[in-house]
Image (tube, rainbow, N blue to C red; front, side, top):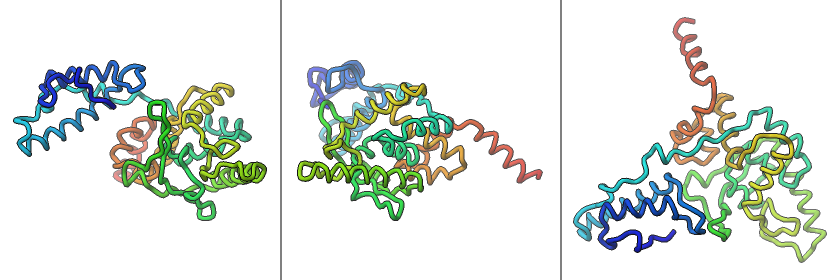
Amino acid sequence: MRLRRDVCLGWPRPTPAALNAFYADLATSGRADGRGGLSARTVRYIHTILRKSLKDAERWSRVARNVADLADPPSAGAARAPEIRAWTADQLREFFAAIANDRLYAAFLLGATTGMRRGEIAGLRWSDVDLTAGRLSVRQARATVGYEVITSEPKTARGRRVVALDRSTVAALGEHRRRQLAERIALGPDYNTDDLVFCRPDGSPLDPEHFLKRLQRLARDHGLPKTTFHGLRHTSATLALAAGIHPKVVSERLGHGDVSLTLNTYSHAVPGLQEDAAERIADLIVG
């Protein structure tokens, strides 16, 4: 992301007005690919970074005051992420029954049963998977930045996590691996050896966007509501909370930095939680 001096007039001594103009420009044309602006949430994140940097500069007497304290980034309400429509358990079962023979079946099942992010699944290696123990380690992710696919480590300690796998997902990954090994034997020395779990028939990496496009095409072909890969993650979280799984466990599986993020993001999407809580409390009090 480029901090353009033609927008932030006054650098290296910015004013509140200059910062506001900078935020407005980011919101309308801040994307690196030139296809529009950044979300309010992203602009607020940039404001947070600038505010912290200027706070340090003020402490070191490099600037007289922290003008970011006087600036007006997008409001928290504007920064709220749009609501994501989660599939129901019945819709998930219908989807997986219909795509059982698809090449990315195991990838989508993994997303639904663990809540892993698309980039984490795209970057998953066999060296990170222990099918015997029924677990995997999230150690890297692949994402598209601009027009380039980059591989990076998780941003936080919570993101670097061990995720337990259920028997159905282990079986799906095992079948996927057997098919992949057959392809590797068939190609011999021409096979790419990046060790990625989900890749092309020759072992070369898949573009992370391919996972989303394939998911949406399959959903459309089978008459299911449109969703995103994050929609699978959202579905996984809401179903887990509805099933009574402790929010701390759900948070750890998702790789959230704090359980409050999990609760704030997903608990409202689970109908009946308040009613269930009311009945349980009443049972304890009045029997």
